[in-house]
Image (tube, rainbow, N blue to C red; front, side, top):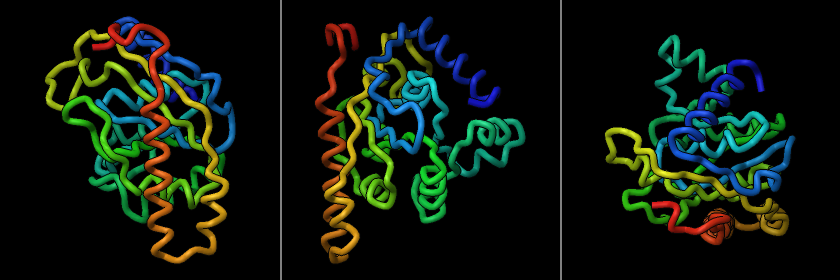
Length: 217
């Protein structure tokens, strides 16, 4: 972590602890170095910092490209090693930057659902994350966030002090599917992208908090 990232890490960690009684379960499952894809469900804009502050390593976040044009915000995002993406969060340029970061040993947070949930429930996975996974060699760690929809859902005006948490699963490597993808047809390749995305989402769904579920609204 560089100094600017570390200050942000401390700010979110302390704020989440004090305001939302945040907890992080099984962060020891996450590789401490090397390329890494953290794949989490998406319930709130507070999800990325929650996932990242559970780990003692720097993580690259995705940020809307237009935000980099603002002097102060752009400076912070660049120092956080954020990845600029277009409005829809995809595109060839964003994918290339993500793959370059992974090749350089960075960690990236991605959301298989593609967008925030409107009802707090898990959504079907989109194939985009499958493409990124297949084109990289990074392990994928499924992550499930709890309570963030109730704390600050898409239609909320202000964060509420509900309990939140993140739980990290075991790394997934997709060795066989990555090998098949090198020689298969284009039609099969599209199937593989969706298959990878579905497997990741299934692992996210299996993760449960390490305490009474009623603690999370």
